[in-house]
Image 1 (cartoon, rainbow, N blue to C red):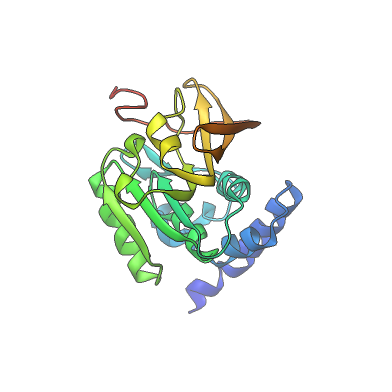
Image 2: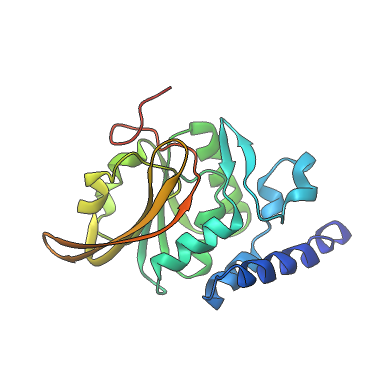
Length: 217
């Protein structure tokens, strides 16, 4: 209990830091404030668990910077009960934030080791989400269409499969660019073959690997 209590203050401080950095959606801030991020990383990194920074989780992947998670979630503008597809489960951190917002979450992870770890973490903390191991650049057509799709890795282009799996009114939030930096995009499907595209700040993500993303290596 005392071990857990020592993380409460750093978690509250993280939320305040995100608020000062421009995150305005209180639902997103509350979600970040509830999730035990320290339990999703190696114990050797616990002292940095609530720093606003990305941290390694193995397989060349990271648990995303909290500001990035909050910013992408805010751009999705998810309402309770909406169906959301996440590309890149990773540690499960973003997935948990979406669950906290009341979304019906589906998530695809390329690395089987991370898939199993995230699945166990979600179960342990009581979050219900549908996970699968596979190529996230192809989406998850079996459960389409989605009200929101969030991609947690940097893509060279917007995968057309993901755009096609949006509902009318659905939003895709995805970082697109080169291996140095990516522009955050929000693409809204306004009609069967009509879309609106908005550009936001530059970010730095691990590469989106797959048939419609970057190739292996």
